[in-house]
Length: 299
Image 1: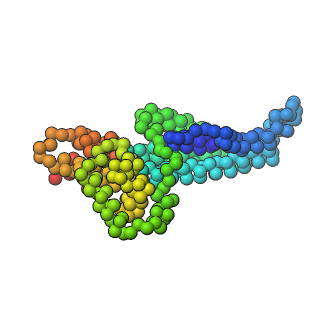
Image 2: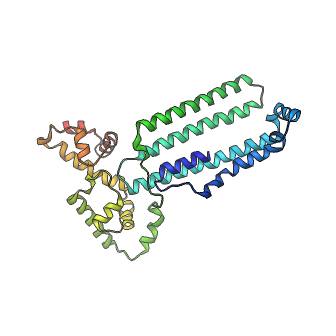
């Protein structure tokens, strides 16, 4: 679990690097193995054989399993917290549709959780007389691990775009919104900035850039990035991701209804308006129109 926790950090954040403080994650492993030193690692002959004979009823293995379960609980919670923060930061700062990474890691974590529940159940059954059930649960857990590993590798091979990461120094808007709101910003000033932003989007069409970020847009529209983030996420009540994609969809709708562009395919249009994924285009288009692009064009 410490390795999986660090892996999720590395996949989510582009500036993540291993350093000395990460050695602290070895503490549960060291403690669990120190418990086994006297009667297992240092024992010899009959003493070691006796330990193996009654291993699963020994206090050492009870503590060993307890440490393992506590470790799993804390790390699985930690992974879910990282994923929640990643999704929020991504939607507030990026438009390149990379929420697939969140979904993939979330699915992988759920699979690990399911496998571990099987292992917990298996360990409980170990202390009962249901030996056949214990064997089947052991097979189920092992098979699940194998299938999860194969799925993990195939997913990574088929979707290399999964590994586009974000900057960990970014914060969710809520973390600094109150401080900015407390500054001397009148409603009139905010309304002017919102109007300035909307006019710029319509006239300059920065959304046509597939990898547009809120930092780049803030530079172009000449509004500090944090103020822009608060304007979009709080005053317009949209994530930056949805805000930009709405303009992309509107642009696509115009092209789809243009009689002179009937020969242009939907795939060509989605790339033209700033999307770089067919699935994300269809999802966003249906969200705003309740129709597929093809159905909209034919109506």
